[in-house]
Length: 264
Image (cartoon, rainbow, N blue to C red; front, side):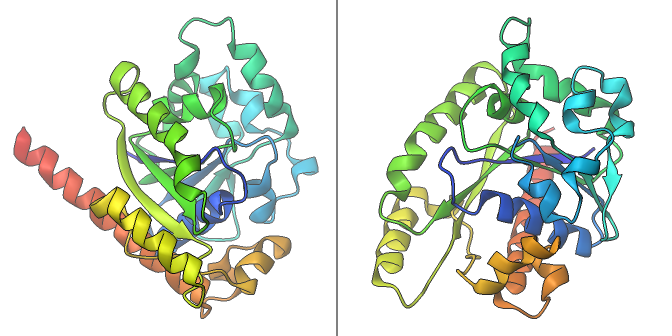
């Protein structure tokens, strides 16, 4: 059964979509069959993998309320083992259409049910908000991964997300866990980065990933070429960082699996 990881942070510009694309690609390079779900109406994860959003015949929106049709929307990518469920601007309407529906938080979970056994990992790229779309992602996921930029207000911006996480875990999805926090846009030459890292380490402790994502030009360039950093420049610092992060993710999940087996 797939491990479903929601990548979320309601603050924009934190490297959320960059992390979704490159973590999914790194897992695929490790020969883990991976599905990247673009759950953001901006569709940046879709275009970032080289898919023309204007030419998509079936998007996530088209199959959202018909789980039996999900296979019609899943597309292969240029990378082996990596597939994508593309987004379109139509996703903007999802929140309005969900408002008056019973069990509105679980529609994404219902959509993914038919494909749980098809993939090892399902990565969900959430929009920069805490609306019904992100809530659906948190109710469908088993783990939450939070990208956190190395900026002064990073911790202030994450408080609301953690409150939402706790409420979802308590009331809607008891299986949801915090997989970890990944520092992004890391610049070791910057004193502010060191100060933020120290504060975040004290705040999150073991939940903080050891791997940090550097601020590099190559990472910024890759999406414009429709490629992950691993397929754009495998020898870059950004590629090395995301491979390291993917290894940490798989290790944490493996430890969790062992723990669950021992508790049975």
